[in-house]
Length: 233
Image (cartoon, rainbow, N blue to C red; front, side, top):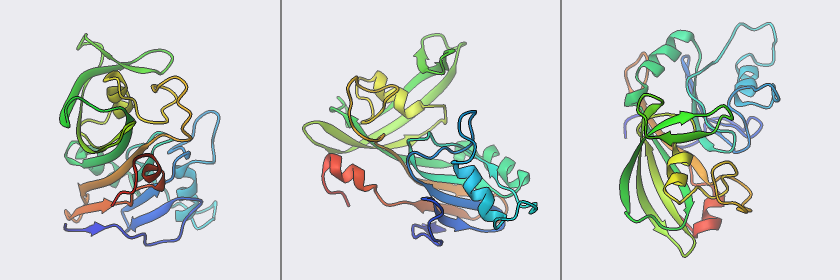
């Protein structure tokens, strides 16, 4: 694929691997357990903080900045894009619907259909829990496409295409189907003792905001997924 790059170009930065860097963009592979951006409880152990320090080369006086283009949940691993200017950020976000985002997910059980698209209207309550509503005026229409790649007695491995980018979308859609993502402590099965969420942002393909080149990046399959469904290639 044009612009394909699956090999890390930099050393690890506190668990983050830089897949691509130019004057406009940073594309990174985020480990599970790391926030994208700060919360009231956590200010420094975030991808944003670590990468800001990186572009400033440790100098607090540096004017170099990075800008959030999109987010991954704390326990979701995989590809994140950061912009190095507001102009690049707005270009990327303006074309976000044309950005192809593919995830890997290991779910409990087996889906009735080996391929399909889940479509619901998603909304959020005051406890910040996302759920589907039958009232189209109370939420945002959301589409999640999936293909089953492998099945075992307990789990299924899915490739998921995020057709819209709502908060917790993949996790909610699969949980409401009766097949939550393994390790999902918010929407998952009660008593699920797995150590982490089995959701990984595997690949992304988008148009560079200024050169117009189509860029595609792909990460390796986390070893944790091999533990759940057997060896994968």
